Length: 302
Image (cartoon, rainbow, N blue to C red; front, side):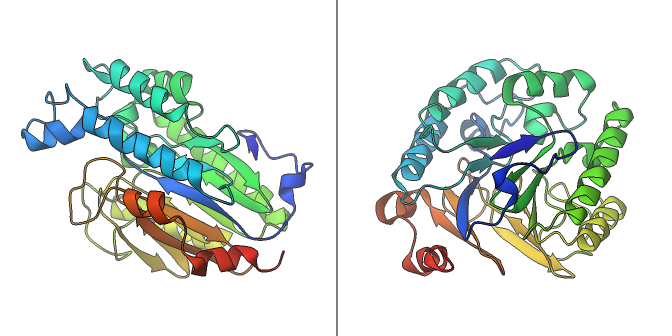
């Protein structure tokens, strides 16, 4: 994997297509939400997270057993429930790190910032604190000829406390997409916490999607750039749709479920022609691994 927050240098072997591969997407381990949600106190009820620790451990164990190994494991935000400055946040973060450090050392971890990581209305301070803990809030990387972009979707949700950071991400994104256009990448894939939309591109504004005018601008930019798919979390349920060939994939949570889905992870297979994915429960992935249909896609073109 080649990481770069600056303009890519296009000089590494990862810029070349080498055949099909897959990665794992997870979202919302959100240490602390399960008790807070059960007790009806999502602001202060997050003082226990033993259940989430077990689920995150189950996720890591399932990933470590997979053969062949995934190219990386991306966590699409809301790493913990505690908002910036709240009582339990640091303890929750440390416990999550203690679980994640057991991930196979050959499987890189990719972190995406969510609203609970940097606040519903982030500031330079909350973003700086996140970056010190988890790495850059937006960046790009290449794997096997595919270009990946990690975005800070909170800057699209509400950048009123740090408009200059929203502008910086926008300028950076335009640079990245221009550079990708000059490079023959097989696909461009985006990771962000908040979905552009949950099922329909023109759906009404909601807590779980981006505001319509912002959404439309981003969707059109992504479409023109040839972006294949956007993977997100935030909704704690599986959902998704498409816009002019751009697929919006919303994955449910490793942690607390707000719908009828199971605690799980998404397996994403990237072939020369397409991006194919399936959501697995943690139990299913840990017990049975990846189904033959997806493994067969990996075996082709090698």
